[in-house]
Amino acid sequence: MMWMACFFAGPAVILLATAFRTVDSYGRMGPVSTLEHWHILQQSGVQLALWRTIWTSLTAVVGCLVVALPVSWRIIQMSDIWRQRWLVIIAAPFLTSFLVRVYSWRILLQEEGWLASILRATQLLPDGSSLLYNQGAVVLVMIYTYLPLAILPIYAAMNRFDMSLYEAARDLGAGRWAAFFKVVLPNINRGIFAAALSVGVPSLGAYVIPEMIGGLGSETIGSVIAHKLFTDRNLPQAAVLASLLGLLALPLVMLAFRGERARAMVDS
Amino acid sequence: MKAASSSRTNLAGSALLALVVLFLYGPLIVLIGNSFNASKYGGRWAGFTTHWYVDLVKDGATLSALGNTLLVATVAGVGATILGSVAAWSIHHFKSPLQRLHLLLTQLPMVVPDMWIGVAMQVFLIQVAWSLSLGTVMIAHVTFCVCYVTALMLGRMQSFDFSVIEAARDLGASWSQVVLRVVLPLLGPSMVAAFILSLLLSIDDFVITFFVSGPGSSTLPNRVFSMAKTSRSFPVINALSTLLIFATLVLTLLGNRLIRPNANPKNVPVSE
Image (cartoon, rainbow over the protein chains, first blue to last red):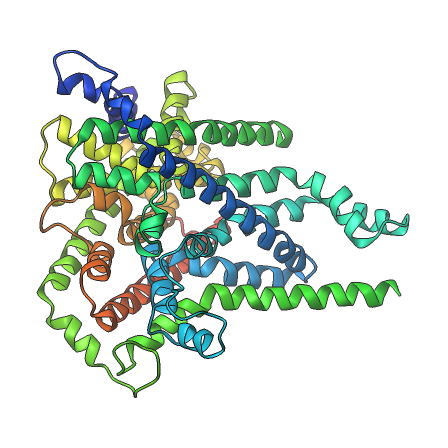
């Protein structure tokens, strides 16, 4: 049985080994390991892409939270059966292919599409500018693709929240907003945190969205890595950037695991 | 006064909910609608047509991508279900530090960005001088599907009464009989659900495939991507995307139906 355990840990171990490969791969390329490849981090283009990645992810996280909080709040006011139905409605698009969902925005926002024509006709969109190929479109599509990931944990946290606390606050004279921000929010902070992580981590590694929706000015670290791998064939530099991406995501992932463990302890 | 203001909040909330549904479904509906639109750019409605679907079926590269997708999904489904079930079994059964590490290994890939997995895989494969092909796509797909299968089966095993195995042994069943006549009938529905989940994950994956596929081994999502990047024949891509949407929809409904009786263990038939 133990042998089976080891054997079936195999694929997982390969994965971990792969993770280390990226780190020692530049040692393999030359006779001695070198830090030379890390110098690409000093390139302004790379730095710009890095900051853009972080900034885009943050905006997407904030955007998702701003939408997810009131939506979950509204769903939680419903009867049990309608809660279930609404959750299915919210989660269902998430099951269709990620790529197709991104692509559907390309169709919706395209130059010749009806949305652009309407906006042009009503002078809302100036001639010569486009709905696609800009940073705003990238963030919008990110919010679109990851919104269910934000709603579900916030909804779950609100579900655990004891509504009588909110009502007590209202009865004691707190306004709706005060009751929500001072009583509900602190109690669902773990759900908000989980939502922020589940949106933030994948958006750090975003590649498809900037590639399909964004323009020249929206290259993320993901696009740079793909460029290094496929166009420049520069494996070590791609490995450096991928490690960096891993380093960016790692603290978030560790936080997620810690949160999980804390919840398990609370539950038991 | 208070009731009035709370109903106003509810109204605002409902309006927001309606907007969110429009936001979530609008693009997909436009996409599906345009796949039947005779107009090439979809700016206006120029009549119903299935022309783009005919074009799609004639496209050799798309057909080979379809074949690849089906093959990879099947291999990923079968491989991940077997590996993931046994992994879950050993994690559940032996609470050793090694198995805790094993658990961590199966959880990590679900929380790191998938792009990172793809890059790590590609770099690893190149380092071990393994040329990128359909085989490497299969390995990658099995790897990430195993994680989800393990998580699903672990959840199932937590509510699994292991004393039935001891009972069967006490009553004189051999190990093979225990596996075939006790364990499989009880865990089987979950394994089928895990299989369908793997199929879904495999069919949906783009990023990891993108990094580990070689020439001629692209899957349907990769075909959508390369068509969207290189060709201008948007309606054909619309048609392909519509088919993908419906394929995942059917699989999801199927999986849902299979998982549901599972929620109530009494419904699971015990073989005689």
